Length: 308
Image (cartoon, rainbow, N blue to C red; front, side, top):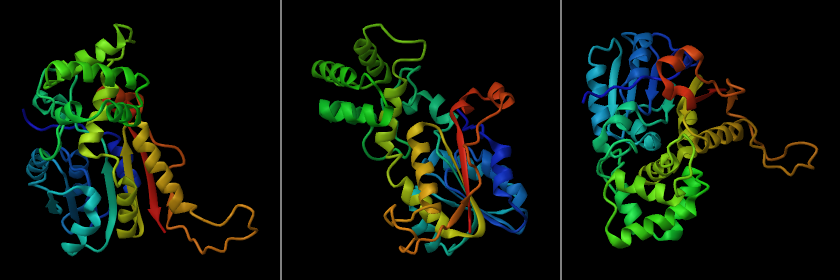
């Protein structure tokens, strides 16, 4: 199966980044290089497109997709959360623009063998990098209390306790090894009472976030990218669920209004100075035409700041 990914909010991202010939742009989540290809065209022959991805399959696909890029391309098999380290080690102490598209690509969701989908039977994996604990390891080894915490915290699942109990009952008989087996655990917890949305949707989201540490150090990564931006540089972040969006929103606002003085102080004495200005007072979302072409864009929210 070839790696494909439809970039969401592409025109909106390009408008906000305001890329010009000769700039240096960082794409921290290359995926299928949908955003990166469009960005490279605007950077031109004197520009540089730097990209990274934790998924080696995505990185290989991006390198191929950008093989004819007019801009210079530099690739890293790294987690964007380590950008401050690997960019500086490679000699890139400043960048003019940056993008984080935090969603899992359509390819990763649709390729059954990856174990992300609750619609297909596959090994229960969900690892982006292929390393570390799989989703099967999590559901078969964590305590019932910890499973409940993961489902509630990362999936915002109201029936977390019942699902965790169902998982523990099932694994006492045999290990849960496939996506189908996990789906059956979730359905058993709902006793057949669920809406038209798939009952395992939040459970799979929670396990994917846990396995890949998707929310870990996201705040730090945003701050690191802002530090790397040149004055006037723009950072765009696309999130796909409320947990991500909340972190992005709060981080942006702390960079704008991070005064630590008590509220009853008449003037600021902590010396805080904002490092960015907000370009999106409200998150940018997909229009009707894009939603018709790519229904998965429905949950996408784009926020952006500009370095002062």
